[in-house]
Image (tube, rainbow, N blue to C red; front, side):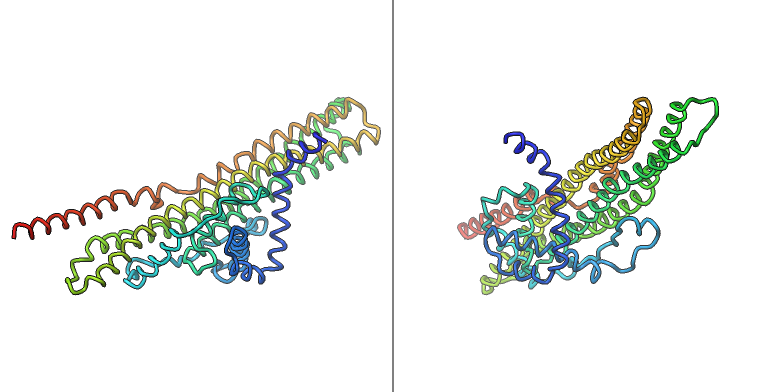
Amino acid sequence: MILSKTGSNLFKPFTKLLRRGAVRQSTKVGSKSGAVAGATAKSSGGVAAKTVAANIAAFDLLEDEYREEPPSGLEAAMFKQLPRPRLIEKSASDLTLEEAQNTATQAKRFYEFKFPLFSGGELFYEEIEDQYLSAALGAGEGSIDERFIDVATLFRRTLNANTRRLLLYWAPLIGFIVFVGAAIAQWTGVAFASFFSDIAQAGLIYGAAALIAAFLVFVIYSWPYKVVQQRNLMNLDNYVTSKFARINNNFQVAKRRALNVERDKRMAEREALKDEAGAWTLAYHWFATRLFLCETMLRNKFYQVRRNTTLYWLAGLLLTFVLLSGLGIGFAMLGAGAEMLAVFGAAALFYIVLAGAVVARAAGMMFKVLQSNEWSRFHLVNLNHTIRDHVGEDKLQIVTFRDRNRFE
């Protein structure tokens, strides 16, 4: 009993990943019902429903909004390639008082958001964090960041799908097919040189098979997989760079207007002054907070990509070992000797080590593409300095006018 529970816990990450794939297929079929679940969500269960609706939207929006021209080339046929998403973030020139008031409303929604403290034990932590971030950014409520959520989810799924295809399909299948061909050649009497013994001939054939299979895996990794993944990440990087830059520009505009709003007002307009100052102040607070939340969501997605890549790598090695072990068992049943099986096993392990070393760089290769040092990140807006200067300037004006009235 204890061993069975331990075994089920050991393979839980792999079964969870396979279950996610099945859920994605079902969400494509039932995409129209997701909006109803998202609209009626209010509690922690509602947050999960909104997340499902957002995930469905990522697939629905792909053809309608993301794709401007279809990808071409053989690499795009082997792995999924996404275009650069179009940016809908408003520019600083569009930032009117009305927009500031709308932004202030979104800020109030976030600051008053009562997120659930308790969640189901069947979820990974990154899923719980993703639910909170989606709700905080206004998923399902007409927020401008809904598109960002869909983009991040879509790219995360696409990156994972391409990696899964390489590590769980291509690498094990190539190794199995090449070794089957080598076995056929060895059993039909193909010889490199007549003076070699049968064991030496088998060693040459299976050793060559291991090198050929590893080379094919290297070619697929270095050309179609690497090219497509780098294109996907460059498109995501360009999108994030542009979006963060616009949010940062809007923050700077809202900050200046919040600091100088009283210059255009008179004493008779004090109510309008109070409302306008409050709108611009909440606006620049919310722009900075949006940067933080968007960064945190990207961090969440990148963690899932790296974690899944590691699991796919381990599962691919295990699957390759199982396939080649089954082939070796078939040789034994056909009457192969112990020395012949040892040669085959050594060549199979050699291929597993080589292929594993080639594809082990997948995660590092992907994240090198991202130029996060060029993003207008949260820590660069200096929100702490802005708040200090804003409050300090207001207090200074209060003291100045108080003392002036006192001496008059």
